[in-house]
Length: 267
Image 1 (cartoon, rainbow, N blue to C red):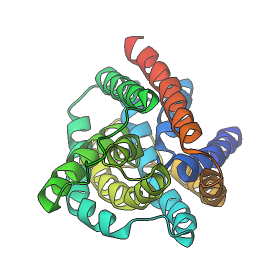
Image 2: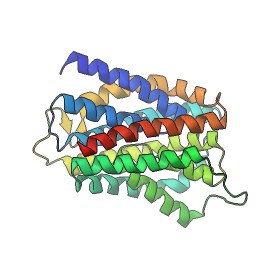
Image 3: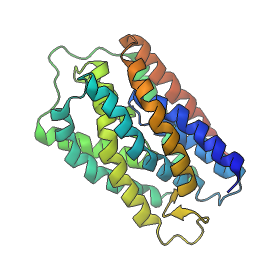
């Protein structure tokens, strides 16, 4: 393994961990484009680089989410009853998402990533005010919502914050609580999605040495070790920022990532 590549993965982990705590996105939305870029530069199989980037990104969230949610929990910001209602649907959806991704080619997967993330950024940037009477749905509605969040997270390799945060704020959950609760949802999303990516990528013959299913282990370990150290810092920063600033940061990050993946899909 190239030492310079490991160093780059560590730097990526530092920034993605901070993003995990700050935005509740598990850092995955940052990682997918950059891992895709690095694996492409290293001339990995072009039909697999996006699948590997998404799978590896999702696996790192198992570590960053635990570090991030601990910091949010200490501030009493995580809505654990909401996490429990989301969890069953999320576990189901997060297993299905990688299976759907395995049926798509690399360009199609990159295009889906770009379009959906761009849509999510627009919704956040518009900052439409929810109805004063709107609340989170009941058990069946939360099962359905969790399933959708899980499927989409498994498809794009993220912790679900790009959809769960807007959904919760739309239902009148305060942004800081939504970010903290989203961070807690990252672990079940990542766990189910990681197992699914290992299972569906297990018999892929063209994966490079160091892969476990679609997951690239050198990247996973390097990024995870670095990210767990900076996730708590991101969480502390999130609680120091006003609501509007946090939403704008979230939207701008998503736009930048969507643009790169659109470029990747079309070239």
